[in-house]
Image (cartoon, rainbow, N blue to C red):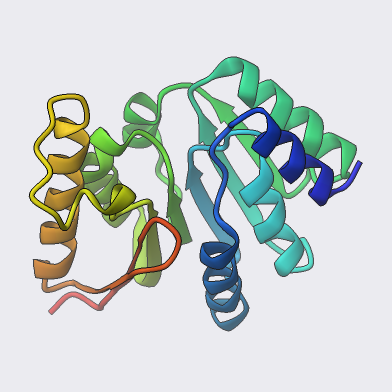
Length: 195
């Protein structure tokens, strides 16, 4: 088994995984920042965590939270199969319940979980960050809906909360945020030293 197999299997099963162009940008950030600890929200089958670990020559510790038990178990299997269990720790459960209990500070955060919870995730990742930490939020433009006048009932909450995330992350004086129009949109926020 290798990373390509994990990617292909996820795509065949329509499991959402990080897009290639988004991954390329994140790889560059990781190589520049050389984080020691990463927190990921939304493990799916472990593909992105494994990619992040590989970029950093497994010289990183990643906590990754997954709500769906079946996917989390598949991720654990994939991680073990590739011998990465010492550097990637899968936490099974709801990030909304788990995040407030975490005390550890992280260098990089990757948010790719329930879109409707992004503002909460932002608040919690800021709490768990330190000066210079990077917060990455994937799918921030959500199929283009976020920047349009989209108002269909089905996705309304997700769209509203993603807009709120953008507003909060760009207006917070302790964050320097850039919204990149790659993949499905990526918000990149750096935590600044507080005044």
